[in-house]
Image (tube, rainbow, N blue to C red; front, side):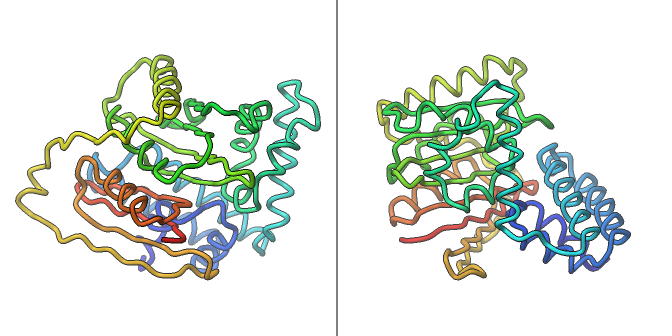
Length: 311
């Protein structure tokens, strides 16, 4: 019972593709029976808090954490990173064969990617990226691909383009203007200087025509990146009545990660339109490099975690 908030925090704020995250959570929970009880309690707690707090993306994160931790508890040890990478690469290759692609189709792209990329992405995502980019490795034009997630209501968007300092701010500005809320971001730079960024976004306006949405994102975001348009400044929108009448002082903290290679920037603040754009712009202005972003909205409160370096 004392850990009923921990599962939600780990699922929404930490990297679930990191074997150490799963191992640490598994050790905290102890066994499969307690894990199942904690999962059910956390699920009910979030859904019962407010309709605004729950969405299918959060449900998917909880389920991912549950099944990965269950695997850890039944196997008895956390898989070694190199073993995880080999397993994901093999599964990605198996998926690529369904598209009648050669066994060497991955080589040029994978040669440009580091181990962190393979640890942060699932085999299915790796296969999708490879299928989309294997003939565009040194493309001069940006590549944007969007698709509906296999489970849930969210969209997955991949952006591949020559790296540039304000790229994340420009992408964030585009999504905010277009009415999409970013809930997860993974940012990578390849060995030959290209950005390979992945986003999970939710449609704030709940539009129904998915095919048109995907085509719009791919075309419009590509055009903005081709013409190097300045970042779209999101509309100020309206603050909720609760935020207006019960103001909350923002809390910002930064500390080194466990490996000593990056910094973790944590932000707790009232949610408002353009918040993520403000953060992205500030990071760009100070030369900080963003690697991952976990965006969590709890009713009227935003609790965001960023993995950064440099600056």
